[in-house]
Length: 263
Length: 257
Image (cartoon, rainbow over all chains, first blue to last red; front, side, top):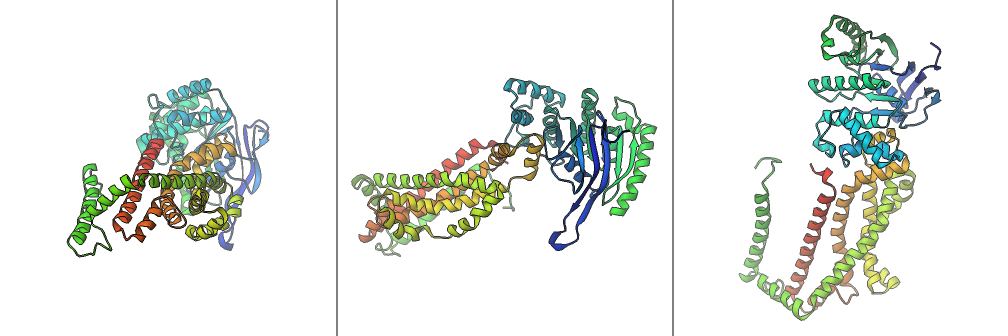
């Protein structure tokens, strides 16, 4: 593959070192990383806590600046945050004073999309994430799962080139998490979006992605890059299939070694 | 009673009223019972009688109106300056670094100590009264608003950036709406302080207002009138507080727990 030519997103030699606090030693969160994301990829970035995977995602989002290297989206360097990269955070970041619909329209309004068109797009995504009937609810009236579904709809309503997810289901209970995974996967299969998905959950990483990137303990670097060759559309029953279990066992070994180094 | 356990609305109102009743009962016992000389403290009935006199013979309603106008006038001026400045300071750190030390210093200057100076500068008219309130409120407001705006949840700001918001959009669509309920609470709080400044301003060089009436009554040793004046202030404060709270709840339903 030619470096950076065909890739939608090219992470080239990106490192991040945080300056030392009170004259202490600086912390190296990421050792220079290279990663290319093709259009329609669904890549899971899997690693133990504190391995810098969220830092990497924040750099791609433009919320943090790399100490070394650069990130190219469609061949153009990323200089700051922008609506071409939708982001969903682990914490609930819906604007509490806006209804579900107004939250989803936030980016569209910022772009100056006409009101009628905003309504259309919002209605489409509200239906897509299964929030019909909750358009005019405030975030505090919603469950955690519903809030994250709204956050996903809000990011996708902007029609970004790539969707960045930072452990979006991390705070949800197991059952809800499973349903959310299927919903997001369904959207990806139907809309052919490009997704970069950060998680520490092995099963989640394998189930969602066509490629899993395993990161090492701090300072983070890419340890393995595993293609997940499982057919689409995927159904939750896939999780008990032997080929799924094989991926899972293999990645468990990889992660376990890193977790032991980090713990 | 258990720690932090809520109580029903009926019990809450009842308990609140009960203390007022107890307070008036204690006051009556002390005065009517002859434990305190009427020269120092009038009894409740005498206070009501004096209040009646004030309202119907001395046109006290006009004084009340003057005081209310001064409080709200001075407070509105202070808010007009403090809100934009506070938001600017909370948003932009260089602006904060520029103003914050001075405002912190000015906050401790007692508004009442400015009264002689203000009389020199602005005379004893309404301008001087408004300025006392203004000085008493504006620095407090600026600082509290700046802290509130500066304390906006970072993740909400970041989310807005990733949705394509630019700086002005962040201020207008995230920082201000996020801070609005707390700013409303700050206004309510500082308005309460403004009431104490206005009375002090009216005690000196004034020919109208509740504070003026209190100084006049002092000369006549009429404690009934003084107490009536104080109670009127309390009641007006309570009413404005209640209205402010009701308005906040209506404006910011998303903030309710």
